[in-house]
Amino acid sequence: MKAAIDVEKLVQWAVREELPKGRPVLADIGFAIGRSPIRPGSIARSLGRTPTIDIRSMGYVPGEPCADARRVADAIGRLDTEVRLSGRSEALRLFGELGNIVADDALIAILSSTFNPQAIVVSNAAQGKRPNWRFDPPKPHQRFVPTAGRPRPLVYGIDTAGDLIELKRNEGRARKRDGEYAIALSPRSPLEWCDPSPLAVAEARAEYVAWYRAMSTLALGLAGKLDAFEPTRPTVAAMPWLGVTSVDFLPPKSAARYVGVRTDKAVETTAI
Image (cartoon, rainbow, N blue to C red; front, top):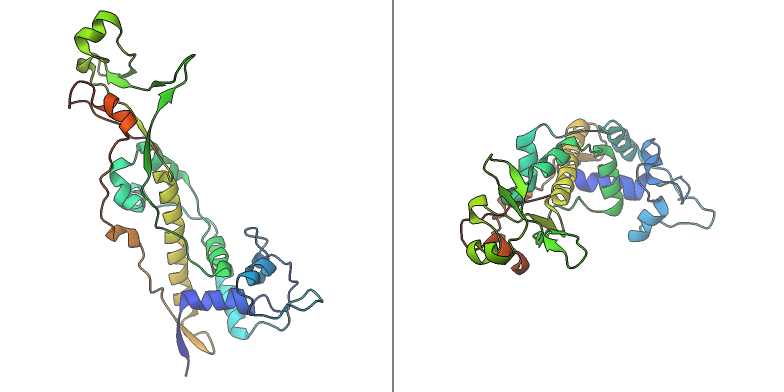
């Protein structure tokens, strides 16, 4: 009777324990599935994380991969090597709880990115993990413009023609009368979200999605084709971050005096 096994564990077993057998210790793990090197990381380094195989002094991993491991390798070799997001709605789902601070530039960037499911599967299996999708909330930083003296905050406003323009701080009588910026121009100070940026989070989650779909493809393609195992689909969620509560982000203290210039009607803008 075949043993049911999560496809994630099956792939890790094949890549970490079976496919290195009979190959040079310093061979790149990508050669285990008949491909050119995928990412830096040799069999030796992969095995170094969990030394389950005896590495002899002759420089080769002893033994030969079993038939099931070879079938897993063949299935991995047939995975896509370049995929893109299907559209804006899928891209927005990657940002999840960060959706209220995402700028259009970040959406454009993630939609133009490509991902390699095959490389993602092999790399994560060799390390005995899955792509990370959980991150600390991004930190807001106000944007400043270099000057001969102290950097000045970058502040935008809307002119009488409805165009977005950069504002300069009022001086002299105008400052006493209108404050640092003219309220009629709707002053706003853009924020830079960093450590990590929303785009970096989305890219990491896109790798997770590519990994999850590739693992589901492997489970379906290997069903009924192995001697000792019957693979099942991943037990983890396809997009686990969608269940995370949205975070209310507050502007940094250094930005507060410019975001709320003399009125609560001033607004802030977001950046990547």
